[in-house]
Amino acid sequence: MRARNWLAGLLLAMVLTGCGLGETGQQAAQRRCAEIQDLYAGLYETARWVQPEDQWEAPALTQESRDEMETCLMAAGLDVVDSSEICPDYLTTGDRFRTFWNQAQAGNAGEQEVLYLKENGDLYYQRFYSQGDAVWVESLFAPMDAGEPSYECHEIQDWALTERGNFYYRIYPADDPHYADFSMLRLTAPDPELWALNQRYVQAGSYIATNVFLIDWWEDDFGELSFNDLWEHLYYVCYGTQFPTAGYEYDAPMHCYRIPASEFEQVMLPFFAIDRDTFRELAQYAPQTDTYPWRAMEADDHTFLHFYTIAPEVTACRDNGDGTLTLTVELYSTDLKTDCLFAHELTVRPLGETDFQFVGNRITFQTEEYGLPYSRPRLTWGEMR
Image (cartoon, rainbow, N blue to C red; front, side):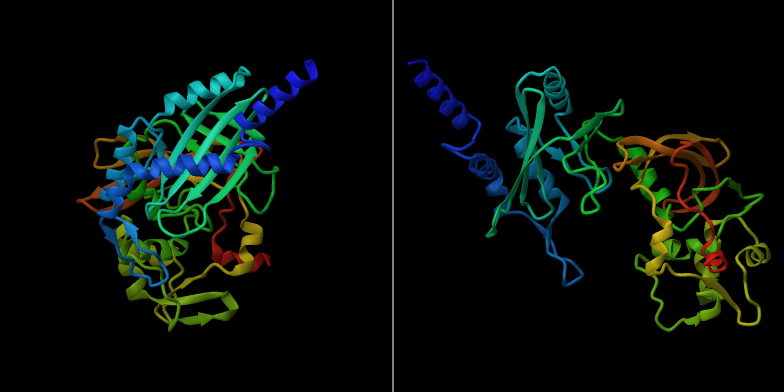
């Protein structure tokens, strides 16, 4: 009799957890996704779309239509990740997730959904749930139109919930080259004004093979700042497209292209308070050819440029009262589950609604263990290889 009762209890537990008998975990997730998709199906049918310029890209919902669908799901009391054209995505019900996670860490059973609406209206569904000492996350990608759903379920191997409200979690073995070490879920709404500053000023440069944010310099002493390595980034800011190398002279001994001075100066000079003669001296102007050297990134450069995955976040802004702003920029890393791997202060001079000048940069923090990304100017790389 006791054996029969034990077996009945086991079978019931297997059904409730989606294991073995009854509805499987994937079937339960697919049923749940269908319920959610029914809520915004009407909005999807009447949505507005943006047609891509690139023939290889798929059409995307307008941000307005995507916002309407997300608002519909939020109104139904669901746990929705809010998307934005400027700010990074964040979970609108972050407090619920914190409550779930605190209970899970105390060994209590519970679950928490997280819903993402993709750019094309497809649903990406996650359910975090705790069982004993373990926490799992199941994920289902559910297309709105024809297409097979994709399901995964993993135990969370490592995690961190930071004071800034970022939840980092790892589901694959550490240092697996096929996957990012950690995923990140924001539980706190980003500050749109700070992210607008990030997009306007910080995104104009880079942290890879460019030292504008990685060394100390000021406009009255540019020091080791490499203007040449900023060429492709500021070209993109000016023209909204990648710099095309076709048709430009290639200087094989120096591993660089020769950019006509008129083109180079037209792009670069407006971003700095510097006279042309000083600029030509610092940017290695070649009077015999009336050009500037620019070294493109090559495939094998990445072997010695490797650094941890980083992304900048402007966490503060100070108006200096002299027409300049100083931004506090912290680099978070999903490889190392940290909100600040290193930090710097970037000073800029806004000029009208869209234009600006770089004024200076100062490194304010770096860890002894990880340091900073490689920052030697590209035109010197040939000396070391």
